[in-house]
Image (cartoon, rainbow, N blue to C red; front, top):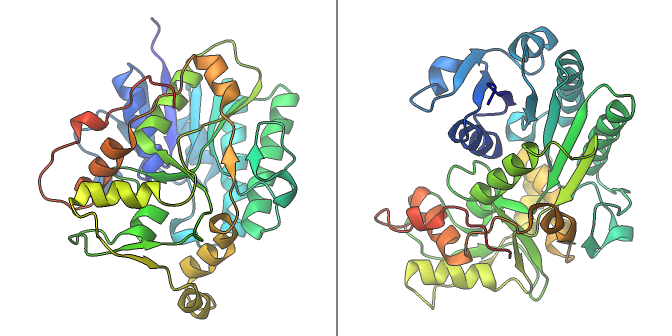
Amino acid sequence: MADRIALVLGATGGIGGHVARRLRSGGWTVRALARDPGKVGGQDGLDWLRGDAMAASDVAQAAQGASLIVHAVNPPSYRNWGTLVLPMLDNTIAAARANGARILLPGTVYNYGPDAFPLLDEASPQNPQTRKGAIRAEMERRLRAAADRGEARVLILRAGDFFGPQAGNSWFSQGLVKPGRPLRAIQYPGKAGVGHQWAYLPDVAETMVRLAERETLDAFATFHMGGHWDGDGTRFVEAIRRAAGNPRLPVRRIPWFLMAMAAPFVPLCRELMEMRYLWETPVQLNNARLTAELGAEPHTPLDAAVHATLVHMGCLAGGQGRAAASPSAVNG
């Protein structure tokens, strides 16, 4: 098989890092762009290159000869989304056009508004009611336009809230539990009885790579991932309790009023407040098209996924459960 080259933008983040390592283990040559490769490069088998996703020349040089560009880069701590996100995507589109590469984008549910809720499929209308959602919808509009012009092939996999080892910033690590501390309580952001969708990062990366390696996809292909659907907000709470061995681990509600007070001064709080509606309204992704394409969705059992996440976060002693938390090909 000819050498397959992928460029991963955002390889220092959760989804970018997982996809990069999964590509490498599958025989791809993986280039990873970073502003300071010396701080992140190691024994991971990736070819770390110095550069900035905001610099078109850096992206163009790193993408030479690549057949896949993974666009998993976001501004740190949600800062300056409005001025940084779209220029970075335009650089990726230009690099894909120059190399005939496919763009792989991790999608979100931010693109959708109440007119599409509660069950989303790939044809659901994108009428977001938030600033961040409008940016995500514009990203997909630009990608579709590039695909329609024959400038790039595009693959989007949409999933729920990420969790897992090395997930980076996530609701799991910033809301439910505190990293690096023994479990004393669970903070849950949602309303009682409201469903919420989660996605285990190793499963997401496995799904992305399997799709990216298929040559029969449309020029603009989108898929929704089922992941883990928590129908009433209790499944994740109980999984954390089982991992901790404490069925009475207390559950507290996130103090949204304090976050609202901090929002004018703390960008992260401001962004989280904007997404609060997703904890008050059930929004579920229909994965029928994905399972029709792959036969089954890679799916790690919830207890194994939660246990591995907590161990990596330093919330549990010992490393049990990591090996058991590798993606399986069980449809879920």
